[in-house]
Length: 366
Image 1 (cartoon, rainbow, N blue to C red):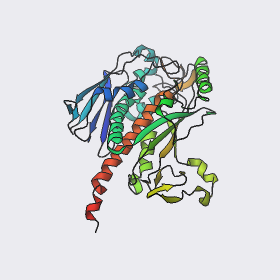
Image 2 (tube, rainbow, N blue to C red):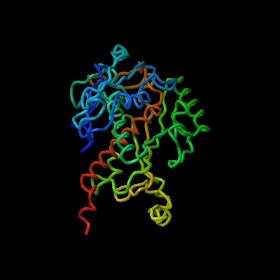
Image 3 (cartoon, rainbow, N blue to C red):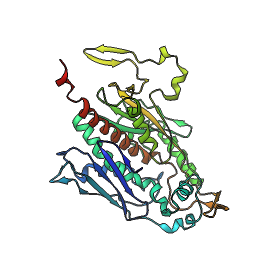
Image 4 (cartoon, one colour):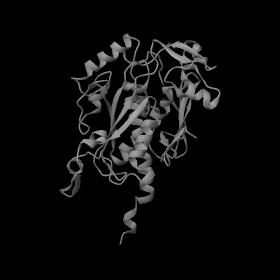
């Protein structure tokens, strides 16, 4: 049901935060793609906890194992199953949450919907679920890069009120990885990191914005009406934990412009069709137009804070609850590889759909 994403390149994630492990099954990966754990582990290392002073100190190696779908280092075209073991979980920190619902978490809604939930670590609602997405996304990124030359990147551009100056066309992965926040603006990053550390010291949290980009996307990916490329990108991003907003291209700022100001003019430059601006964010009519796809995802402040808050218990009685355990004061540094993963998964699915329907269109042209 709600645990599967995609059509031709389809992933199903599984596992709970404090269970035996988490993972993903991919169905639809093309055969003969060179693939080992070494292709996947770097992205998981960027997502894992305990990597810096501004993320949760939970110590997990997040070592991935490919269980099926490859032979002699090549994909078979059969389902690829991957698993990451949970190691450093401390369920006792959540004992009180068995009976009390954490404010702004999914505890209450899961309780009402299912009548039974895995409360240690948030169970299925924990961000550890995204391990499967990131592992699958690493494969999708490799396919996009090697078959179509598409580059998928993401970075932090805002922490609460502090904004960075980042050009979607030019920032690099090296600049993103140059600091623990994953903000490529070297001038803005230190103040952002200081703000996160300050809020953490206060037992509080902050949110912000992650910029996602896809460069060199061919013209024609996407489908009309309900399966517009930006609609699937929005669904992918808004399915990530803690997301509260999505905008592509000019986004909400576009309402300040007139139609004449907002339009992206087309020009033929040495036989290549370009646009003189990119307020559409690389997508028009739900279909990629060849320009860089760029969008922004808003992540809320982490819901768990180390302060006493009003809530209710499993008997629907008023009570209070103080946050405990190990938590991120800001999800943004670890959200960057998650945004990249969901971008790649959305794009590879549309790439395969386009190839299936339109890849050999020239055969039918008079």
